[in-house]
Length: 520
Image (cartoon, rainbow, N blue to C red; front, side, top):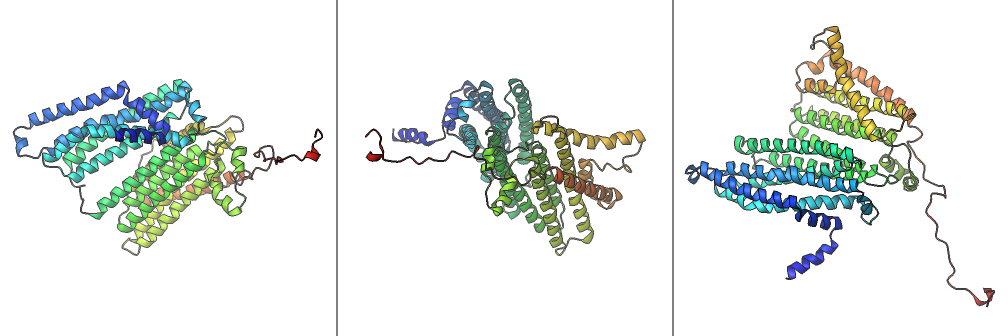
């Protein structure tokens, strides 16, 4: 068969991890059992749904009901089985020690992660092809349009791909078997929660609500484009995180992650600008995007604060000589000091862009009071990650003088800092027997977010003014302290020690003259 020979020859050019993982997955007992269950369950649901709706199914619209059932059947392998299989495929290699063979091969870390992810995508396509006739059958039963079917399948596919990438990222967290066992339980619980949430969303969006299907409205497709762009940025960020964890320690692990964080930053910021200018009197888009950016940079900063301050000679050799190039590449080098300033720069960028958008909207119907309230809300939200990360960076620097601090210890430290900031006002409130309405929970970011989102008179209250004043003082103080702590590591020098430079080629004479040969 010409097609078989062509496919076999083409497979020689594919990623070898993709070929190996796909062959193992499709020949495994787990895949055979799951695939058979999907087929049998789909057949049983078809018979049962037709039976309970007969004879109404001959003239009534039964397509949405059957589509929800088929999607629920499809969601289990796509949201639970395939992502967990991707997680275990990489975790098992790190546990058994077979990953070392991959690490010394010609494949770079991104190719390893992409090979395993595309293998998971191939399995998804097999499940989609198996249930495709059943889903096509729902279109013939009326009540559902082809755009809704395609949209639902696309969202399910994108969800499965992102969850598979998250599984690969979590598989790189630890190499120890006991930690991997505990992490496996946590991962399967998270995937089951995602599965139940997806079931609820399918039932509500297909059977209960139809208002969202505004296919003739341009805002619907712009919202879809926003969802896809953010999902793809998250997908590539997860891939970079997974690749960074399996990269050698002497390599620059932070460059790819920080690039993707910056891309995701501008994706969110771009959509915030679009929707705020599209609806100048609505504050929901600004509040949501600012909260999302604060959360993104807050989580990123927790791990950046735990990075090592020491740069390997390999990284130092990559530092450019040009001052202009060093200004840009300096932020991509690992290190808590550079990471902290990188995040502070991005938070400052969020504040400037938000105020600029609000200023433009003030000429398009945004009232002066709404402008002031949105500005106070934006600035207040940005103060929380700036202050907590600044305090966390100082504490990590002090602890690192006595103990070795890694990203996991930094994560625990920042978690307890945040937990303390949320619980301290509650403890003081209980001790003083004070009411909630007149007690300031200024150290709790959730308190500020939920009360600020509800608007009312909160954003103009003295509590918010206290947050802005004390937060500004704390932010400037921690910034200056961190600037002094990190002054030596902010601008590293290029490696010039010949001991760590690559060996220079030695000129070897091509021929030996006869008169120079003593034995001639």
